[in-house]
Image (cartoon, rainbow, N blue to C red; front, top):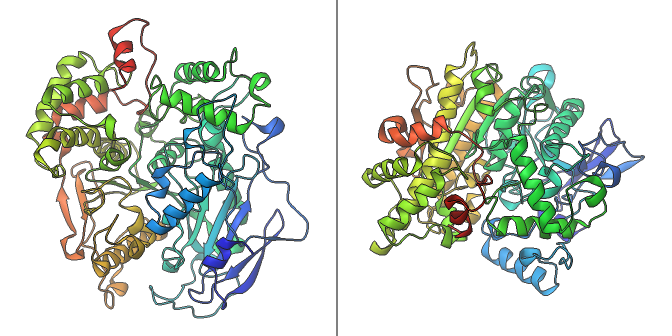
Amino acid sequence: MGITSLLRFGKGDAPAIVQTKQGKVEGVKRGDTKVYVFRGIPFATPPVGALRFKKSVPHPGWEGVRACKEFGKTAVQNLSIVVLVFLPKFVAALVWGGLWLTGSNPVDNYHPKRPMSLPGTCSEADCLNLNVESPMLPGDESDQNNGNGPAPKKMAKGLLPVMVWIHGGAFQLGASSQYLYQPTESFLARQNVVVVSINYRLGVLGFCKVEGGDYNCGVWDQVAALRWVQENIAAFGGDPNNVTIFGESAGGMSCGFLSATKFAGQLFHRVVLQSGTMQTGLTRDEAGWLAEETARALEIPSCSLATMGSTSAAALLAAQNLVIRGNRCGGMPYQPVVDGDLLEDRIVSRWKAGSAKDLDFLISYTRHEELLFLKIFNKKYVSDSEEKLLKRITFNLSPPVMDVPEYQTAAQLALDEIKAWEGGATPPTHADYWTYKAIDFCSMLKFAIPSHFAANTLVKAPGRSKSVYLCRFDVHSPLMNGACHAIDLPYVFGGVKAMSGAMCPADVRANEALSCAVTRAWANFAKTGDPNTCSEDKKDDLHVLPIWPVLSPAEAHQTMILDVPLSSCRIQEVALHQVFPELWKMTVENARALWFHRPPPSGSDTEKTIQSNL
């Protein structure tokens, strides 16, 4: 048994075996939470050899009983401070130090011909695996009141709603096994839902289109996992006809992307978008240019199965790092593509055409999203004057990024709106004023306005028969000095105790009260499409949010504000289209894949701007 199992499982655990279509898997029934836990279940054939850069293929199965008590391998990626920042400090220090000392930390891996070794947790061959947590297996009639909600109630045909988590990480990093998503207490599953968390291919291996290969391999992995859920989740007590997909950041964008495909309503029925909606979707031409840049980093004529089929994963990762470091393609170049097959048109266009009209949506974002990235990528945000901020805004609206008409004039209008807004995070010193205004601009452009625009578009889509809800997390992170990107995750999954005093506020009880209410709301949404607590559960439950109104075309900005203490949660009209009319118009009319730079004309001012590393 590995160290992960020793840390996660206790003496009171009992073995549990489930028969899937691929073979038997053995997990455990936790003695403390009474939740059944299965980890590292493969859902697809290893994507190597002839399957590299190809759509995932169902796993062929195995003989006997497969041990599924430890997390599986992650997709090929860098070790990232973005991941470590969400670990308890002592664990982060141990992980970082251990990998550094053993020479398996590829953070500075920029040499495709001399690549550093990958972390031992990564594997190109074995990364396509998932985890399942279930409060009840078929035939389990015991009363398992575990102290965090009512005892499991039999749902349709004795099955429980299913929630499938798609992790974030800019389509470059992350894993279903991250600490944030896997608190040992299994808070979300104890709300009487079956929770599935999945891995998928990332970066070059998941999102670089090579000649002879397929587009969107990483998204096809997500589809393969959802197909596995349809085939197997009933054996774990889950209802395949009541599946909610939910994700944050790139995971939220993945869910938005999937909701615009033909699989909406087939493989899943509800969607939760957290800090990511419709901000992704390169054109085929943009994907082609990215492939050219990747080939240049690898010093090969072109990206193809012939030239890249046998290149080591470490070398591909080094090339990916070179492309991103060069700043010609943006900070998130490897992302899903509007390929005409999996996705026929831009996400927002598909929504307007009614592709998601039969799906319930819950959309959330945080008030000061970009503060997380200020901590990690400080130089990209620091602005010591109004002139420097205007320069940054101008670049973000220019052809490489958004291509707003008359973008220099538009930049001044956007700057005026940001200067007039007083709802941003409070800068720690006067010298940080313009930097924090840059944070306000990026938070609005990349997260807040897209979230509201997504909600508006979905509500007004023709033939909509389902509900849309909107919320904003305002919880102040002491570490980040505001409600930063990902502040919602500890509250959704329940791991606030370990985060209190750093990522989360210091008051543990206040954090736990909000987390209990948020976890309940997410689970309620998965069960019925309505996050509100039913009248029966309200009688004995103090952790209840205010009545959460469903959006309508006439009231499309009614937003649940989530904060600590719980009593400060409220419904508020957040009319960003009125506060930022010009920036709203720019975002709506030029909704393109963000965090990607398009190729500017050679020698142009915009090319020089990119090369200045703004």
